[in-house]
Image (tube, rainbow, N blue to C red; front, side):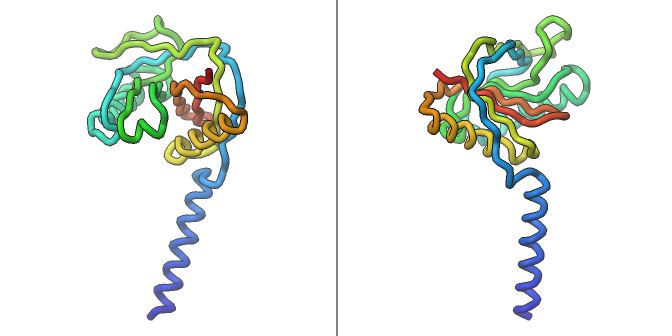
Length: 174
């Protein structure tokens, strides 16, 4: 009986390891120091409060549903206005969809535009991984690169989760 449980445990462990590998869980983020060449426009709503609050999840689902229904064209994205460590307790974030410009589509009720300006020095992290795994890997990569290069982060982060490309985070440096 113990051998059956051991074999089952090993099989489950191997299965989870393969699934994690297929999702990109064993990959590290690629991080480069860059200057943003163009502005990024987000259509969305601002949220401030506990990161685990249902209201934050509701805004994320709303942006996803508007995008899926074709009412907003673009990729899912966020601008965080505080560090990832503190955003676990209290998030200050603009949740929405990255759009090509601010004139080609009408905003849904209650939505507004925010701009992540061009000309900013950023640590640009990207990874070939599932959006479920990517955020922790991207933020770890940004933090490690900032420490290695002795850079100070301003705690403003643009998250971009494109459907057809690599998830990425741009972290503004001083």
